Image (tube, rainbow, N blue to C red):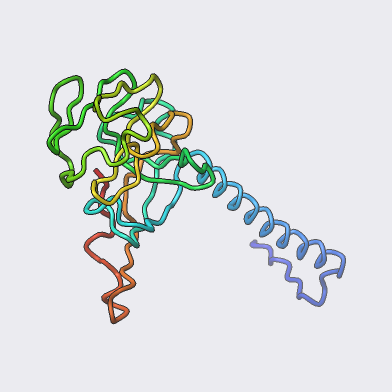
Length: 213
């Protein structure tokens, strides 16, 4: 014979038990929030970090208003290489973050002549806009214009913006050391054009989810 289940109404539950249950639920929510915050901080510190593009130095690859994700984990396993788009601490003011493309790595000889880049005396394929004024203030950083060639120091990188004629980069302030690199940019997750008239036009829909090369 099936025994009937005992039924207890809320009024029959001792107040002490009700208080314990309330504290348990509150504690669960608090712990869940703390774990979520901790995971977010760990991910931001060691794995992925979001950045916003404030200038046009990386046009056409990145536009003003692009929001990107940067992989901060990848360079623990592989070395930065030519062509990578990296975020790093600005050598002149390390409180600021810059984004540029690696042009030459440590140990390579770099030369720019007639709007072309040469690495170890071999021309490299252009990945962005040509250079009208190839050296900019090169002589201020690397010596006189009599020598337009430089050897990149070990564990250092020569970087340039894709918008070559509108970019403050290694031509002006020198090399980026490896330990100053924060990570490699890999994805545009949001893009906002503030100069458009309507709200719907502000979003650059075609750029959402675009990989960065």
